[in-house]
Length: 341
Image (cartoon, rainbow, N blue to C red; front, side, top):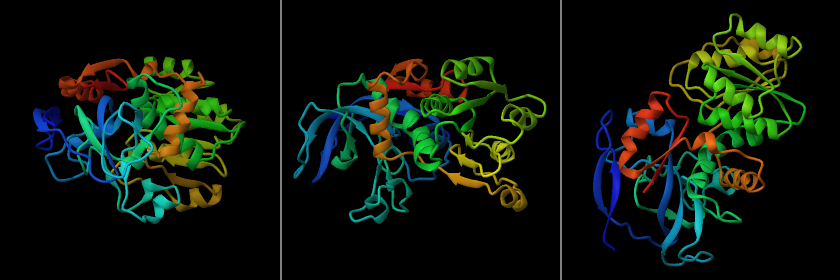
């Protein structure tokens, strides 16, 4: 089937390399996808820095959309040319977490772009079960960012925190994930408070539906947020920054009976006194990525005209500029970049 262009990580801490690789062949139950767009997110920066400690070389890329290019044996229900969003996780046959609708929780996850080659390439092979069909065509860069940049906060708010109309939600960190969390919490009928550093991100939070915006450098930030919530604190805090200090802030912000949802992940230990959790009956919840139904929900919200994505598409670059896209993200110049092979 010839060769394809790909961007390969050969050493941790090193730039990606532009390589030619054979186009992979789909096996039984697999589909060859022609990648049309792949988002570049913080997990790719984390991978490049050695955060996942997985064997190299690897082709990154897990936030992707494309069209079916070839079908492996025993694949039904799909045809060449069909558009699909790609779910980045697969699990072994019979996996009990996947059977219960929680493939992201399985200890045996195989992650596209981390454990197996991903979508920083012209083609990628995926299990047919990982394909999510939109009910109507969606522009490829939009479809790509709907998977992770929207699917991840949607999972945190809907399936982990179970946010209800009328509740108060605080979002810490208005990056690619946090900006979508603000927008989604507003759509779910919550009162939304955003904690953001820069004036640019504060303005973005307001534009996406935040009722109140609190600068991250506010003196006595906890007191300010509590004052804005009637003195008690919010019902839900969604922490979207990879920082133990921000994890601790999230716990301090939460009101009695509050749910603290950790989306941003840090390897550093957080310090929390058990008495704070017990006396306020807090729930500290982890939220890992997303599941296929989150992608479907995100697509439906977009097609219903209820979801903005322009802020996630600030830079659409050709595949060969993957290193520039990673640099932009690392430097905070964009919330997301999208590569188009």
